[in-house]
Image (tube, rainbow, N blue to C red; front, side):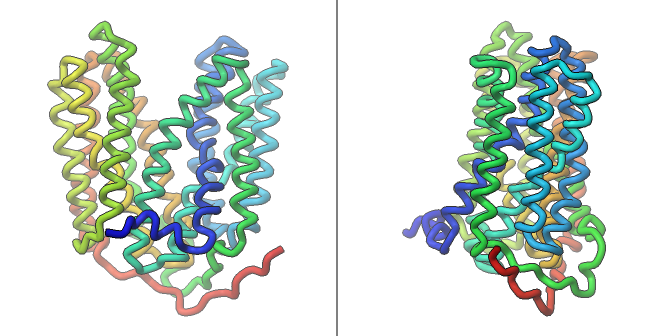
Length: 406
């Protein structure tokens, strides 16, 4: 049996843009925690570190879809280059401001401009779609991207904090900024795989968030992101309560490993079931597997329950992005993907906050009630949206000529 992952990389240019894109998106995980690690050491105030990091993350959540909307209209190279330059310069100013103890307002202003960083995962998925549009290989490509995202979040955060602690406070942010600059440069020079700019037809005007499929999937994945964050916060709180705080990293790692492995397996299968049904099943599994978390009162039970809870995360992301590709007009694909990724990020932020509040007020074990509630809302959203998600995409009838290489 042929290896489906080997097959997708036979496409000309696939290995190059995938490798460059992996390094270019490491700052997604490295920057938010890197800001906290840097400022908590240089300024000694966690509230300030958290506030600057939140300023960056929330601003990026607002700006990234707008950047991707411009990418859909004008092409990747014309938009990614200037926005990345702005982001890299802003990160450099932020590092200098932290190191030299410039006024506090410079930290917040530089964080605002750094948020211009484009959504590289959305750009990668757009390139895969250009190569494998309406072909089964696209599901495998999306599975690969989901697995790569998992690796980025697992490795990126640890790398950022580790560098800051082992070397000097700004080390994590410095390496993150270098990855952004050189990874994006390596990605964008590969013009042969850059998606064509497609002309907007009827039904594809305005923002992608006005499309009902994007609204449904983004709303559902806000709560999936909350479940993801809840597992991390609750694992830390419970293992600390059990007197085994070092076990938290093991439990969180098991959660990510389960999602990573199952995602790769799903990507290797050529499932014939409609994607909206696959999404409903995956979200139903996530919702059901939040229940054992409520009674996991030892580290082994917690690890087992968390592993089970994580197995459907990647399949959910794979089918969600597959639905975006099939249900959103081709002329706004990148923006549509970015909105969904933004939803996941917003959910993680809200989930961390909500879980922290529940843990502080009702105890560590009760933090998982946030997962139960989030899973239920997400499942009801997907079930209610089945008819809309089963609809047809508005296709572009014409496409602009490819942008000439510069």
